[in-house]
Length: 293
Image 1 (cartoon, rainbow, N blue to C red):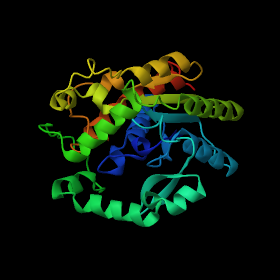
Image 2 (cartoon, one colour; image 1 turned 180 degrees about the vertical axis):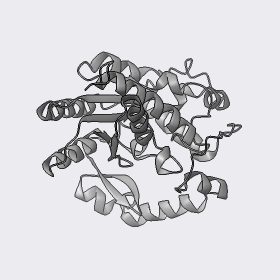
Image 3 (cartoon, rainbow, N blue to C red; image 1 turned 90 degrees about the vertical axis):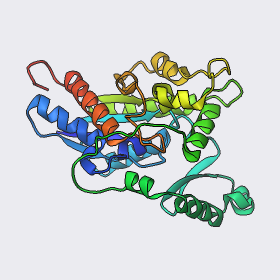
């Protein structure tokens, strides 16, 4: 059995080893439940928005790949704003950036030059200390399930959380590009229907919604400031009617143990917890109690 996993870096994987990524863990869990081999075809790409993932899905179909089920993972933190109108995804130094579609803005605005983006990449990576480099390094071996207590918010994490709060949840911020998400989900459903295979949506929450330690260390009353942290979850609940939705919010709720110390990606422990939970529910969704498809 082959399960196609589509999405961004949450799907591609933030585990320290390939076996510690949520799609691979989900496939292994599903395999144990049904007593048959299951392949996780992990096609997640860091920085992909829903439109990018849909284009990749269509490309795989055109290339003749076959799947027994399709899983698209939505990360509430940025998937609603990745495919902003008037921008396109380009890669500089291995990092995804959004560039204006306008040739004039790309060519003559200094902040949009590839040279500036490359310098930005070098500046950011040069500030990574040894601990962070170890945390994001890929290696073969067992998963690192020991979690580190979040005792302070680093500059990079604080800046990232601040940007996402304003983009997704503030009254003054721009509302999520829900029309783009709706169109992409409709495209996934239609292609899956044409293939005659199930389509499942997996939702990953914004870290600030489930990490009580992060909210405490921010030292802000977000409700009093008018932030609505449930906004995007409510949109999913009220607008997604076709595919089954597996929302990992409650299983990841707690402190910072499910996340990397300095960013909003899942730690090995978070990947294992989410992957096992998703795998169990895929077994229930895709197979009968007798284990037959």
